[in-house]
Image (cartoon, rainbow, N blue to C red; front, top):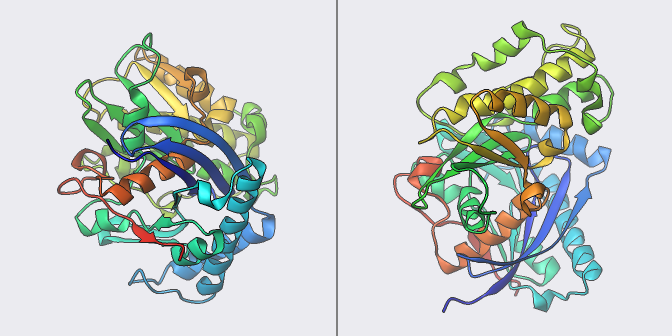
Amino acid sequence: MAQIMTAIGLMSGTSMDGIDLALLETDGEAVLRRGPSHGLAYDSGFRARLKAALVMAAPIRDRGERPGDLVRIERDLTLLHAVAVHDFLHANGLKPGDIDVIGFHGQTVLHRPDEGLTVQIGDGALLAAETGIDVVHDMRAADMRAGGQGAPLIPVYHQALAANLPGDLETPVVFVNIGGISNLTFVGGDGALSAFDSGPGNMLIDQWIEAHDGGSFDAGGAVAAAGVVVPELAARYLDHRFFTDNLRRSLDRSDFSPPVKGEVSLEDGARTLAHVTGAAILRCATHLPARPKTYVVSGGGRLNPVIMQEFSALAGRSGARVLSSDAVGLDGGAMEAEAWAYLAVRSVRGLPLTFPGTTGVREEVSGGVLNPHR
């Protein structure tokens, strides 16, 4: 019998809004217990530094390069994660010795799959030393060395969760994660996986709101709710070759940009981008092995009622139902962090993290770098 491990997953996604933490007990195959979770928001100053890091990273040609202030930002990012772990342990009555491994995503500052190049800043060895817990990081690189897109990595966790979904859901069921970038996972009746990035998620709306000094996101979808969809603007996004190419590829923040400030009103821009988020998912779903009947949505996008309204209305035209992951007993805010805990255990066991049907890798491959805490 495989060893059951207690793992913490740490995720800082493309929205760059903070750190998500979650605890998981697993053998890397079955999910035995989903534990507590927590989120730590970055302050505005650190978010600004992360945005600057994207610019600093643009000239990188070798993933070990750290131009400009990236070395200091990477260290500070890692130390923030260490503080988040210690606070999480304290809040839940745990000690470092209670945790077998941490799965550490770090922050993606560059992702160019067509060049086989991906860079996540985050020092796994420093995090292990600071927390006193073994750390697995850099889980995308092995996939890209083997010809994969380096994303998405969550599908194998979706596959494990699919085994315990309520039996009354109409199948096929597709998991949709709406973070900064959206991705979807189709789990076939035989367990076969098909997954890929499906377009901009919250990223464009967040950038649009920030450009108007309205905060870092559209809280509760209030801005979008006051606008209308501008068809010409929506078409500009949905006619992008990403949706029409037969080859599925993973996305970087720079692949899509928000509208130019002033070309539409704040409200109409937000509403149109919410529509694009839902429509993009459905356009990409046409590349799946079968037409989905149920979409289970996780990530921050599920909390924007206008995104969910647009997505539900569009999916309903093809007879599909859209549900929040919380409605089926899953924690939609913690799922990515849980996935990173799950992937860390799989990495320790040498189990595959990615598959031909998820990232386009030539054959299933494990990955990750293990950093012992001593």
